[in-house]
Length: 462
Ligand code: 5AD
Ligand code: SF4
Image (cartoon, rainbow, N blue to C red; front, side):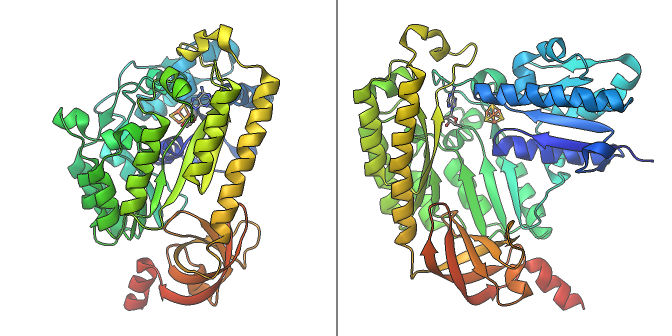
């Protein structure tokens, strides 16, 4: 009987996509996926280490799995991804019941190491640089086991060449490596033939995509134009660009290529120039706002989201008030706000003398949240009465009769579908917005614009 595997993913979209690729690899190795821990022969934890709570969650989960494994002899546990890359053999020191530890550069080794561990005991394989043959092999992405049929992630670049003082990513994911543009276009074409209508391009610093290939200018604008004109790809999203590298050619491609969505996630991190400089972000608050204005001028009705860190070492009340002021001026649609977390090996972790008092951070965090919630709600309320063209994700998680769909800005919309076609993943529907809630919109179906291509093909055949 085929072995069953269960993958639990922590962290960002790139990790989610790595888990899909890993699932494809395990299926190719003869295993079957399961969601049920009781019946899993192999449990893979694909990990993150961006903040300390990600570490804690992983080791907490491993603690629970020790009990499960004690009751199920023969069960294997693999730990992959960023935290493995950071802790290496240390994962086994803290959780001796783990069978396989694989880092960020050799995901493709996981299936083989699981087999080897059965006879030879625990396996740890961490590389210090990407395996050019292994990790970015196009077939890994094409064989990925995807949950959704209409939308797909595409990793365009791994690693990061920046030196943000708080960030552990460059040390775990290494320097920037871009995948060849032809591979990516081919991948998008294959995905489109399989019914995918939306792709999200992933990288730590997408604006610099291709700089390692040309040794000069980035190729991101060209990539957007090429992927955006692949037949069948109706929507292209991307995350994340770095404000210092956001260039007019990217913004022009966003404006000119219909398929590229009106959505920009532009991490601000802080609004004080002193803090931005200590973070090594490479821009001032004024420059950030100029870049944002450039994007908004070129792309009308652009949805803008951001990341902000509260309590970076040395952040004063005056610095924080600058962050509040810039956040208010930027009028974000939504923001991911984080409490600074010292990560081992980063410059900021060594600034212990300047750590901000946790109570002060808690208070600032709540004040920032109030500002971004307010601008988000105002943005949503302002959309009431508009007709939005949305792409359907499927039934909403809470109520199967309600459709969940996304606007070009990436906003979640709930509405009652008129028929089964308007509930089908990938269908395009015009919806009139009737209510703006803090984190989603509600609307009424106006018209089904088109059902999915997959559906159309089935209709032609029958
Ligand atoms: N502490 C808190 N937040 C962090 N981020 C990255 N590193 C840290 C850290 N050490 C946030 C940044 C980044 C997002 C993905 O996570 O805001 O944009
Ligand atoms: Fe993603 Fe960074 Fe977390 Fe790794 S450490 S999973 S790259 S967020």
